[in-house]
Length: 129
View 1 (tube, rainbow, N blue to C red):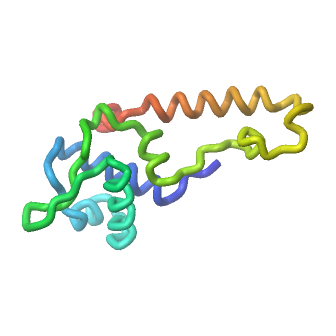
View 2 (cartoon, helix red, strand yellow):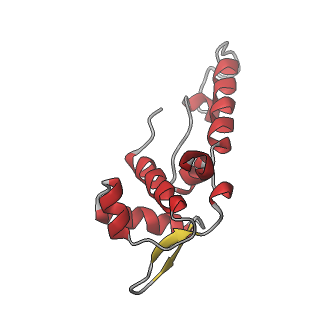
């Protein structure tokens, strides 16, 4: 499993905004400080806004801000919002002819549950401390 650039950039942008503690921040500032291509960041932030993680405001003092408190936003929620597929192996999704007889499925399921528990326990608050 490899985390996409989209999710990596999205997380960096969210951490940047979490440090602003509710203030709006321009895409230009986030792009420059976090070294994220502006056009790509614009698409990512739009997707996060549609997913309820960000809010936007137009104008001189506009930009993006977190739509919720940073302690209420988890890495797992962000990844799901950006369409990150967090499966270690396809057979967890039921795409395996050997699933009924597979001796390793229990290991994959335990590892998958551990991964999900971990990403769902990491909040933006824990990342900005």
